[in-house]
Image 1 (cartoon, one colour):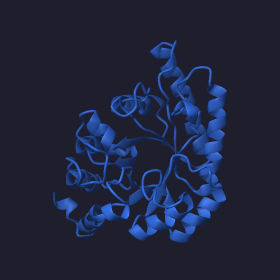
Image 2 (tube, rainbow, N blue to C red):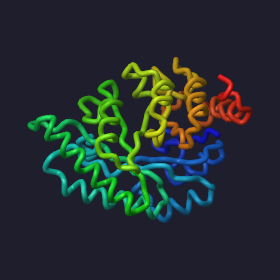
Image 3 (tube, rainbow, N blue to C red):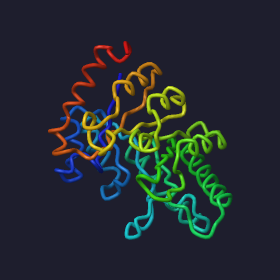
Image 4 (cartoon, helix red, strand yellow):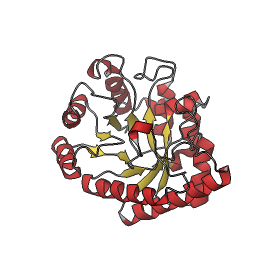
Length: 269
């Protein structure tokens, strides 16, 4: 069955962060995710989720200087020690909070280095993350984010993520496939899922264009959910979209999707 995760950096912003897990549970979500939950102590977050019967799917490693809009630095030569410190913080928080995945963000392409040096740095740091995560019983995600969303991000396309996963061959390394980023790149998300379901660890959705809730754009989510059903994919579908109004007022799509799934309608498509 389909299982949906509420991205608490996008959904239920009507509430303070500590109140969002309860709101997600009331709305019918089975899990939550948040790239930067660190303002809440890990043990407290685990308690809040346990009260609501929610799983914690994924968080990102500390991503750098927020004032500089950094989004990770795994691909930056010269910041390896900073990456190791970030990895330790993320792994400790994931273990204490119960998060299954840690997401390693590459950051933008550093100025003054050739692509071979940048790629080698990224793969070395990513391998370190996979080894540390394996020792802690966790898994690692990498997410392609294209220039339509984030200019000059190193991990910018699905083929690059597939290449990294195939190069390292770490069983706990998976791709986070974001349908919105895929649509921005001209991909057919259902086709990507059918071809690569075995190495997709997590999925995020938002309609395209607009990045609002399903049903507000042109993405055929029935085809997407049918692909997941046919592949017997057992991960969580993360809802990382900007609600058109309040979160709750835009959740009819979720009720309908879960009803169709319970009825087995996606298998019939």
